[in-house]
Image (cartoon, rainbow, N blue to C red):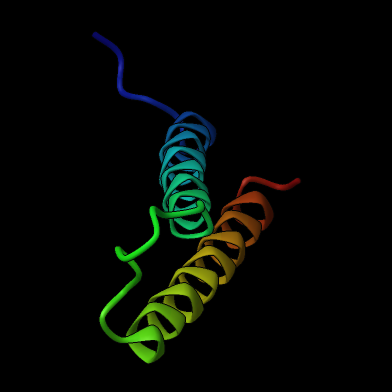
Length: 74
């Protein structure tokens, strides 16, 4: 089996980052779902913190994808 080129590696890494970002979007969507009465989060501040961290993680993934694109000459 031939060794992959840097472009192959960058493309595969980008695909993995896309999967991670999609997973974070799913998590955000779940957190924004309606919940049954009487079953709200115990601490809304912690829910808000988790939402902020998800947003930050998505932004970092976008930065990593941009860096990979630049490294592959895109």
